[in-house]
Length: 248
Image (cartoon, rainbow, N blue to C red; front, side):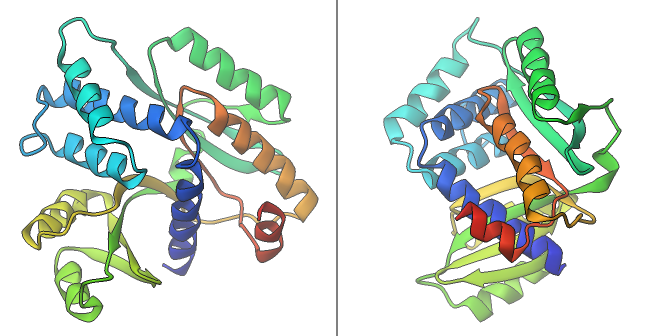
């Protein structure tokens, strides 16, 4: 699981950077909208997906008024409808890329994603072409500044934690996708509100590239992440120390 740990921590850190951009709020608003419409409820106590979305909103410091306004708007009849869809392909160097989108215009989204792959030297593939190279995992981030980490770990392992990493005052918990709800319930029982709770696609294996080639692949990833319809991008590039230095 060491590779998964590294990926999770990198994604977590990047998420913290993304939170500095206004796009983070628009992503969360889409999450809230989809959660409300899918669960037919604006009550976090009866809508697990909405509870996760609201937790993530708080994690990026979205004001309470913005959260409540997004929920209210999503509850309104005839409100904006979003569709969730995914795209798969390859970046330069043979790096597999999986893209998750939430959009109100399917034609615009596919055109934009295809254009980014073509412009950045990648290839957009068919559904299923790279999905098997990733596995879905739940990633929870918990503030442990006022908790006993050792005691907490025992409870979390019982709830299905596959891996637990501690960085400063934060604990990053990885669970298998089917155990996402169990972990969420356990944290509720312990009266712990996670700073974030996400379902991510972690690569089963990664590919190492020379720094110059790796940066070309990451430019494609960055371009995808900048698109307003893209919620998340996953790839199989090994993020070596040399690459991380270039990104810092």
